[in-house]
Image 1 (cartoon, rainbow, N blue to C red):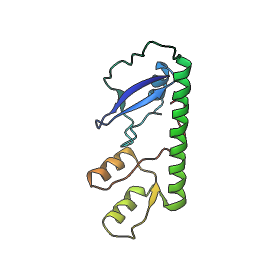
Image 2: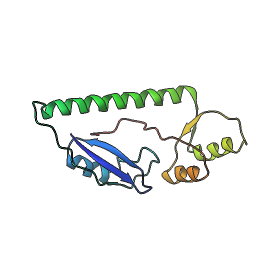
Image 3: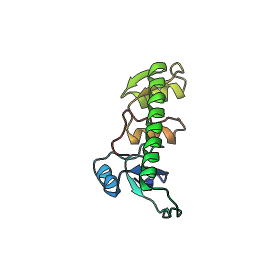
Image 4: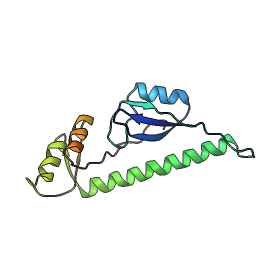
Length: 143
């Protein structure tokens, strides 16, 4: 496993794990990497300090196993959040940005909603002061 510090075009930095260095290149080429804060898919590697392990008997397979466990825990947590949102909020589909605005400006009842929005919609909502969160719909491959 390899960890990269990534940065989106909006300046958000985040860490991501990949099976190997080629995994990052493949996922970036297929558009499978996006910023967890704003959904921006224009993501690049950021500057980072090398990780130098201590001398001892810790093996690479132990690190890989722990990374795999942590990745599974994260995916399970995302699935729990996604299920909670689906069970407790109204699905508004591609009308998400418009409905979020109507709620924010008091034009319709306040309630939890979820649906689809483009990165441009998310940015526009953010600029209007309308807080939204992006939740992945399915586990990602190889990350």
